[in-house]
Length: 170
Image (cartoon, rainbow, N blue to C red; front, side):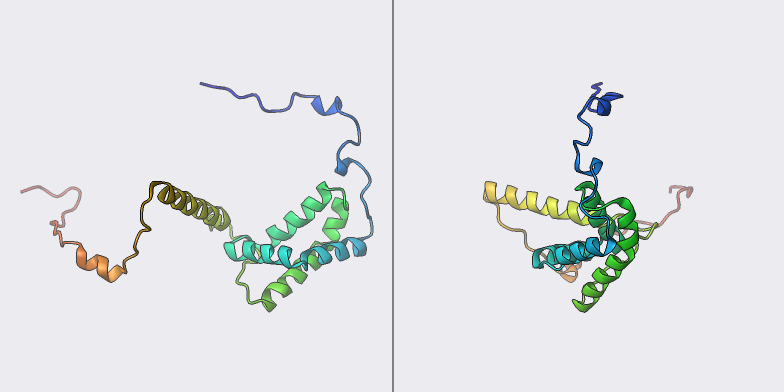
């Protein structure tokens, strides 16, 4: 059994230079209006908006997207957590309005009963990319897709006697 020691040593954070990370220094702005303007400018960029819509369509809930945007801004030292809490509802509604105008199907909040759709979609995409790469390397043709009706016709009928688990065999 292999044990990996990748965790930080207790007290290790006390040995580094203070205020070395962006979130340990004062934020760039403490004004919620300035922070909101900055986020709106960033999200209305064509590439950022396209990426946001992709993640929303892939199953990431809107509140998770907003939390991620605000969390990354706090980590980069752009504004504090307090400012994030103040501007979160406004940014949520702004992105929601953009998504509705663009006819993007999305969930606003995560369902507790539903499995993580974004992780499943990501795993399916990765698997398809890996299969495509293997097919290209080995010179295999692309698989043909058959309609379900064609598959049903090609499968032989196998009849099994229907018996329960505790039925006697004859």
